[in-house]
Image 1 (tube, one colour):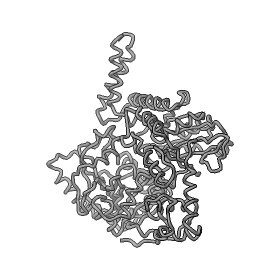
Image 2 (cartoon, one colour):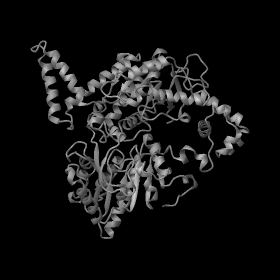
Image 3 (tube, helix red, strand yellow):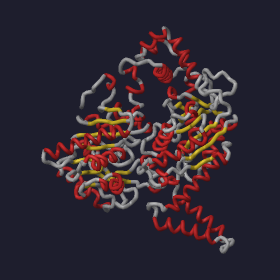
Length: 626
């Protein structure tokens, strides 16, 4: 096992390198691959790479393509082995990993077809065992894998080694965990379409690679990455077995690193900076750890948890507790747009101007009501001029069944007067023919995608209107990166940035609400945030920018932790019920675990545990400190 480089990494059992963002990490890894290829070539042998699929390696593959095109890096003698493949999918299926690799990497470099190896998902069941054994033999015959690239799933799996996979497991057919299938549901237009089995390299096969690199991006990977890096080796998290490999490393972006001890609890691994933000984080953590309200913490509890130095700055826990409690209490406001004619010294938002022009940006329809439906209603009821802008149509989440239902209703309606409704009949019939022609997994034609976007658009409009948003204040941008792409194949372009910029220039808002700052950079939310950031930065010299505050909310991602929250908007039982009703307007696609408002109730319970007033629910926000 590699030695740690500093006391701050004492809890990390896999050497871990932190990067500002995924592109920076991908560029560093691509340079390492370049050096490996050149080294193997100089030694007269073929480099052997183990490759992964999913959204995580996409920035890495794009950097390899750049090295090939711009720096003449050749892959002509490179041999590759992919980790896995869905069982039951042929290689031309839109979600097969063979097609993924062709589209993301192989078709763009000079890798030779005979050097490409992936498991075959179409092997008859009675031949799977021999096929897997042959895959193991092929890796051995190639001289073993020099560098294995890995991602990590939400269950902690590497490859498709789901919980329960042993350290010595080899290439085999394996049933997929339901969480894994849920994560793939959007790609397959519904969980029911996701294969139930896959062929995967085993943990033992992976550990035979001479070097291993595991990557994770975005806040949704933070907790599982920390468990794999710092927790015990366990079959429940197959990535944890990398702890015993002598040449394994983890690469994390800023968002994926937040659950590591050195980031989450820096005072336990060295001298803390004790800035106001870090002090607040530490005290809130201590209160929740001790199951005590902040105002009841004692000197001894600070000492027992490595925070004695903090007490030396305040003299006694009493003074420190009051300061942090007041700061947390001041994040709570029933006036998210600012309370007019009030002293706003300790309030999250400014009193003036009033009313404010407010812009809510939703990367996908439903992000807005999930993250801040109650706050949207509050802003409207308090007199602010609220505009909602949906950046994408959300059609990639809509199943064919929804489009079929729409087409059939249109056909049945048209039967009342076939001659008068001929165009509608032709349209509906054409939709049904397109769905039938493409099959359950084919690429949807443009007309079908437009119909699905219209279905989603109607739901989004109904949800926003139910919260008081004026129909004329609802916009749909249909950013090209989304309308012209699909999951894991999105490319942010100048037209996307220009469209977002046009909305900013037109409204010149006093407040903007947005999500995606901590999302996977290849996700819709991550790319939408980058489009906003670029549009914002292009207008930094405009006077209105100076007076605009940007608030970040969480859409379907995990909620902010207490110390991150800078504005907490409490909801009454009736307000929460109204929010839930608005979420339920989205009947074509839902996120079951977020439908009942439980996440907002949990945030309120956390505030209650800290000793603040008790509320039914709370929506949380963080100010974008640009």
